[in-house]
Length: 387
Image (cartoon, rainbow, N blue to C red):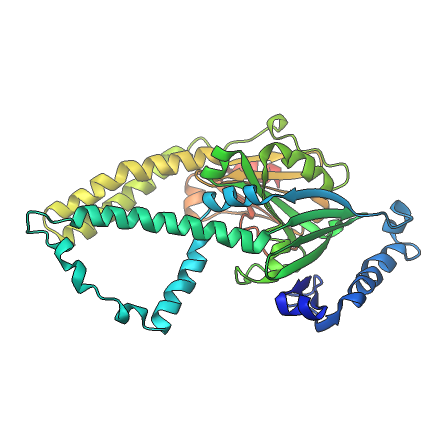
């Protein structure tokens, strides 16, 4: 990973971080490296290793080819991605922290607005002010989300050179990350509900040794959690073919297996238990109307649970497995047989009661994509056969 902020660019240097599969922290960090030496270092790491005698990559790629651009994200698409996500809460948190730090709330005169909140007066504007405040807050968060996406991914470019993928993006802090294709363990295509409406998708990947506990603003997360922050959904299959040799993504042609038929009955009982607990808590707080909290919660919880179970699907590809889930945020994650590290069939006491099991397919990655292939509510026979 190569990081350049405004000061680095002004003096012609960069910070370079070298990461392997050995852990969650970079193995080496070069704080101030002249830009003239960056390309030489990259060529020494990726070029010589692939051209070494006996290396499989050397047989496939006898010469280093010129970089080929796979994807470029224009600013209007980043604006759409910002409107479809809630990343603005990060910048909002920074603003709130600054307000407390500089005591801005104490300097603002709230007394002149006290008449607006006189609910007993004939002209009380409390409901209108509350509604307007909520709408304004939502708009501000969305606008801050747009700002966050532009700052983070301005001039985003994904290029491929032989078997290496390179990402360049950033407005003030310029980031360049290189990901060898052979290190990719898991690929996850994700869409929240607004991205589906706009016809957009994002792609996250996991590589061996990638940390799943990094802060969201960590520069190294660009190569995993934000591998492709936004792109047209109709180009996903085209880009996935570049991530692995000979890989053809055809979602509609897969033989998707649903969860066990008894999943609905099991979730209905679980929902009834949760709704009963909500009613008892409400009854303890407000008698006797608090009991209505459980009654009101039962139907939404049940519908949500059933819809989520219907969204869970498992499928096998020719060379790997796929797991799809998510009601509001749809996630499809896939890995390949030559990347699988461990397989498990787990059963809780409740699973054994319902003759169900969970199938887990784990790789050497640490989970930055936030969608492991852990498929619950499968019939025990099917889970063990798949295992």
